[in-house]
Image (cartoon, rainbow, N blue to C red; front, side, top):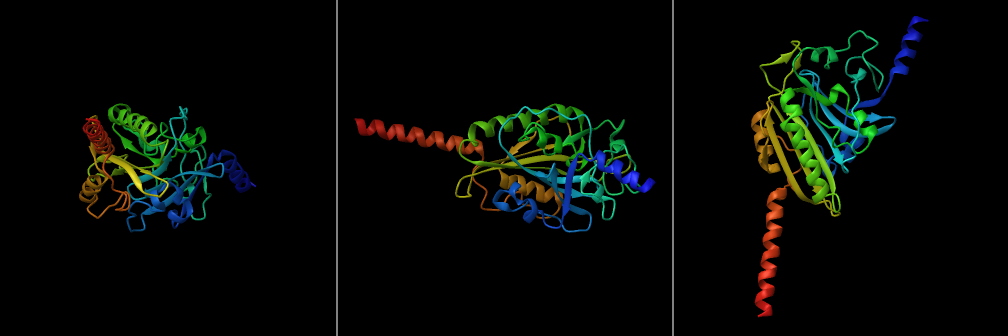
Length: 295
């Protein structure tokens, strides 16, 4: 009877679901440019998660159960929706319990083994670090999507000044730039990730990343990436560096100590800034030629 009651309570506390799958390119590939995920590391510590709420999949996360932080989350940007933030965080039963529920759970009910392969709210308590979103609320495509981002499988320890300062500013600027430059013509894909550090852990369990990074790709109707850009910053309150996706991948290859691709090689057009400059140069050239013709 107590077991049945325990299961019932867990069911009532379910806020959604986050399915751990063997191949999220086939299960939730709609969040990857060209349907191809960034590099997936080999090893039993990694899990592929289709982050779902109320039977709708909102983004995908590649999770590291050893460091207890995500490697990256991939999602589509569809405009600034002014979504509200939750004041609670979920955890993922499937990471710790064999045949566990695919539903996100609150920690109000304790289950033996929880936390063996993932971070818990208690790890962040009095740690001096924020739960830093990878797929952020600001770039969510709906309120339900924003709610789904509040899972600890989508968060990593972030310097509070960085999280609420330069990184927040970057998330906002990217959203504004993409709204102005891409949404009218292209489909926008974003990947945001972290680089684990070997020196600092929360509660001697959760790796504190050395870097946060993000990149985007704007695909046209022919499935070609017309505009892309990348950014990477140390986990401290300094302005992240802007890079082409190719240069970002080169730096990530050095930091991860293995070859790493955010987008497939054909998705490496000039950065947004360079593209805008190129378009401006083309317009100026056309105007100059027109004047010569008129003369």
